[in-house]
Each structure stands twice: as structure tokens, then as C-alpha cells.
Amino acid sequence: MDFELTEEHVVFREAIRRFAEKEISPLVEEAEETETFPVHLFPKMGDLGFLCVTFPEEYGGPGADKIAECIYVEELCRVSAGICSAFLVQGGLGTYPILQYGTEEQKQRYLVPAVRGRKIAAFGLTEPDAGSDAAGIRTRAVRSGDHYVINGSKTFITNAPIADFVMVAAYTDPTRRGEGVSLFIVEDGTPGFRKGRKLSKVGNRPSETGELFFEDCRVPAEQLLGGQEGGGFAKLEDTLRSGRITYGARCTGLAQAIFEASSAYARERFQFGRPIGRFQVNRFKLAEMAMNIEIMRTFTYKVAWLHDRGKLCMKEASMVKLFCSEALQKIASDGMQLFGGYGYMMEYPIQRYWRDARLFTVTEGTSEIQHLIIAKELGL
Ligand SMILES: Cc1cc2nc3c(=O)[nH]c(=O)nc-3n(C[C@H](O)[C@H](O)[C@H](O)COP(=O)(O)OP(=O)(O)OC[C@H]3O[C@@H](n4cnc5c(N)ncnc54)[C@H](O)[C@@H]3O)c2cc1C
Image (tube, rainbow, N blue to C red):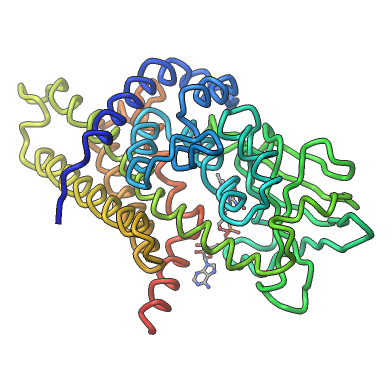
């Protein structure tokens, strides 16, 4: 067993941290206020190899491993969880199915420009009446000659307002619950495809989230992922499993930002003639935060390591997501408490971290759904 990061991992962490602090940090305030994603980051990061970091060189990616992806997500989230959300979809949910299951033509047409930041991806599974019960989606795709006609709607879709293409889940065979789902790549501008409202959110505000509508939307048959109907649910499960590991890194990066802000404040804020960090209760809070971050990071890397070795790790991926997102809630709450009244003021970043953290027990499978997956994997 070797717990050391490789030299490449260490150099990569330094590079992405430098980039995040220099190029992303100055954009955060405006993006938060306007709820607008700084889209120029896509080509800029694409040119530097900072998008879709695990994708192979043949499609323009740096071909890094899952541990490197976790380092990347941690460092971006440490600076802005909201901005990081868009890149997670770009290198994960929106494109991973194409990498794994797409035809060569689909890879050339969508993956290559996505890796370079020339096309923005989104992932459309959730519907107004189907969230946790993903197999309950109602969007339908019916074959008509050399096209499919899609009808339905999606909501809460990250990157929807800025996306050039969306990976859309729709039933081609509604008689087979789950199994009859197929995945389609739908391009912005396709007749019958409409972007709805941009949704205003409590946190992760730089990430743009929206609705999508399909009204007799005619999609060429070549847009069916991998050219194969059905089996969409297994593809989604694989995609979500990989995303749950990265989710651990997302929580760790945000927790790290909370720890850094809280420990700095505990040193500089004086009450009763002493820094508040000298009171035992606050020292213990910070010590506990640091301990939990260490566990989150180590556990995340362990499961990323399993993934890199081709292990299925369905149970472990859900454990990472559940453990890290729940641990983050306590860390965010303790951080807010340490800041006292100042924490509740918008001028301190701790309120942003607290609002951002709240999302993480909900998306990509709520904590309750992670419990169900773990129990099922344990045969319970
Ligand atoms: C900011 C944001 C971004 C998102 N981005 C995307 C995206 O890019 N693409 C996408 O497809 N979706 C996206 N989502 C959707 C997200 O994945 C869903 O919100 C999530 O899956 C939960 O679904 P729901 O909101 O409909 O909640 P519901 O499924 O209605 O759940 C409500 C509550 O009931 C609980 N519950 C449900 N079923 C059970 C059960 N069987 N046992 C116990 N408890 C249960 C849940 O855990 C939850 O606490 C996003 C959501 C948000 C908020």
C-alpha cells in the first residue's frame, strides 16, 4: 500500500491551484452576483488541458487518472464550487457517456470540441416529476424514418442555458422500465428543442441551471448514443457511479476552503482579550474539521484508486458521496458558527461556502438514495 501521491499528481495540483487562484478567483464575485457563468473560461481551460482531464490523448485530453481528476475538482471547488459545477458536467455527466458508449463519429463531433472547450455539454435526466425515481422519466423518443421524435421536458439541468449539446435520457421502449431508456445527443438549435427559464438558486450561483423542452423535436438517428436503443439505465448508472467518486473531491475542496477561512478568522477575531481560536471549544471544532477533511480526502482517493484499477466499486462510490457530503454539512455549519454574526453578512465568503455546501446531499443521488444503493449492494 502506498499513500504517496506521484510526482505528476503533485505538479498537477500546483498547476491547477495556481490557475484557479489567478484566473478563476477574480471572476467569482461577479459570477455570484449575476448568476452568470464566465464562459470564456471554457476555451481558455481547454487550451491548457484543464477540461475533461481523464479523457485520452486521442481525443485531445491529457489522459490523467481518476486521482488526478479528484485533485483537479478539489482545487477548483476550493475557489468556487459553483464554477466547478460546470466543469464537472463538461468532463463527466455530459461527456463521459460519449467516451464510454459513443460511436467514433460522435466522439469526433462532440468529445473533441468539448475537451477543447469549444462546445459546452449538459446532462438531461431529471424531470419535473422524476428526480430520485429516475426510471420514472416520461420523455419519449419515437423512431420516424431516419430520425427520432422526442417529446418531454427536463429540469434542474446544469449548464442548460449555455450548452451547445445535451445528453438526453428518453424512453424508446416505455414497456421496459429503466431498461427501455436510450440516450440521445441533442444539439442546441435542433427544431423543437427549446431552452426554458434559467433557474435562480440558493447556492452554486455561477453555475447556470435551467429547464429544457422537447416538442416534436426531430433528432437525426445518428444522435442516438452508440447507435443502440435501450440499455440507457446501465449507461447512466456507470456515469453516475464515476461522478459519485469525483463528488467526494467536490466536498473535500469546499471543506478545505471552509477550514482555511475559519482557521484564519479564529486567529484574527479577538473576544475577551484573546483570539477566539484560543477558546477550547473553537480549537476542537477546527481540529475536528481538519480530521474529517483528512478522512474525506483519503477515502475519495482510495475509491478513485479502485476505479483506476477497473474495479466496479458501486458501493464504495455511493459511500464516498454519502460520507463526504454529510460530513461537509457539519463542517459548513461549524464554520458559520465560528464567524458569529459576521458569518451571516454577505461580505464574508463563509456564507457562500455554507450555501454551496447545502446542495451536495441532494444532486447526483440524494443521501437517502445513496443509503438505498449501499444497502442493496450489501444484499440487505
Ligand atoms: C443545482 C442543481 C443542479 C442539478 N443538475 C442536474 C443535471 O445537470 N442533470 C440532471 O439530470 N439533474 C440535475 N439535478 C437534479 C438532481 O439530480 C435532483 O434534484 C435529485 O436527483 C433529487 O431529485 P428531486 O429534486 O426530484 O427530489 P425527489 O426525488 O422528489 O426527493 C425529495 C426527497 O425525498 C427523498 N426520497 C425520494 N425517494 C426516496 C426513497 N425511495 N426513499 C427515501 N427517501 C426518498 C429524497 O431523498 C429527498 O430528500 C440538479 C439539481 C439541482 C438542485
